[in-house]
Length: 144
Image 1 (cartoon, helix red, strand yellow):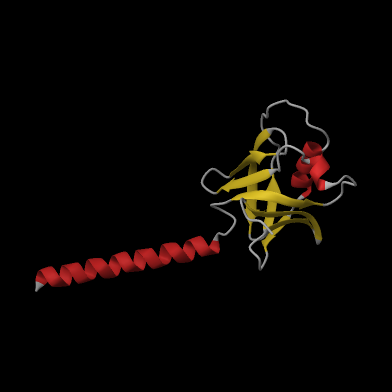
Image 2 (image 1 turned 90 degrees about the horizontal axis):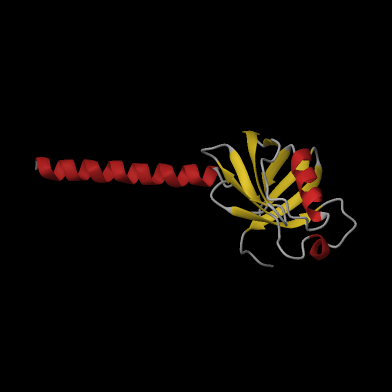
């Protein structure tokens, strides 16, 4: 009888841990994905012309408080601060020094200007400056 109670108690504990982990992951949709840029505000140049070789990407690492990815040309990493939906990025750390056109600068400037984020009803990451949209991202590999 003791053995059955022990097994039942263990199963209940494992079930509770499993449920709390799923809830926690659902509350942090920003993390655990690589986000791929889909739209950037500002440039009067076609998106495909800004990023002909690589589409910028961003990945948030909750443990280290760093964001990393590529800016359409070079790799980057930077610190980020998150308080509710308020978001800010530190200066990007050392990057490779290849020149690939203006897209890189537009991307880095938009990152620096961003002060708020949201995950919309379609699961996309949107970065804002106040109420103005700066960039839309989709989870890597998601198509129209």
